[in-house]
Image (cartoon, rainbow, N blue to C red; front, side, top):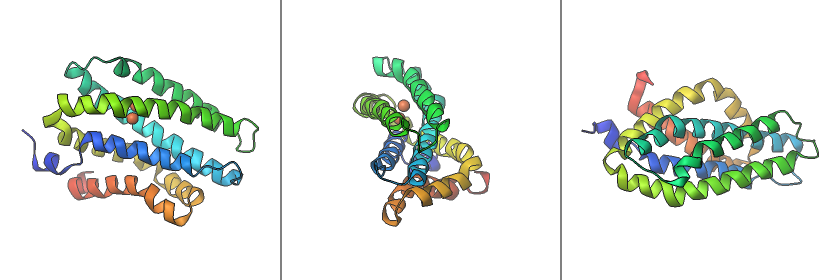
Length: 193
Ligand SMILES: [Fe+2]
Ligand SMILES: [Fe+2]
């Protein structure tokens, strides 16, 4: 039986969609003639968001799908695709934004991400909404709680990259997903978060 917290929580599937939107919004701010500092801030924002998102899916979402017997090729290739992203993230972090291959490497990462996100949003998330219909809020609350733990050590870095990477208006949009999650978690879990 779901608790009140579980019922009030955004569903896990909508939280996953919000994360995807946040990463794509970050990507859309990246321009070839942006300053190296702006490029690096946007890449840092996208990479950290992707790492935390992949971890949350692997710890909470994919196991819940496997538990209810979801058996799709998309689920099978999801972790290998996350690992492909992790390799590209490591490569980007070893580079300077002025390196000749920096833009191309970020585009390669985003091509993998867009393909992966398309598969999740057209296959896995609708399947989750059928198979896990009565657990979506409970799993969303679990994800929010775990997200706070994963984000906490990076709070300062996230703020700096957001300010450097985004002009004021889009910063509000970009920060929206993260802040909404944090606000919800504080309100819900209070001192225990
Ligand atoms: Fe994923
Ligand atoms: Fe995802």
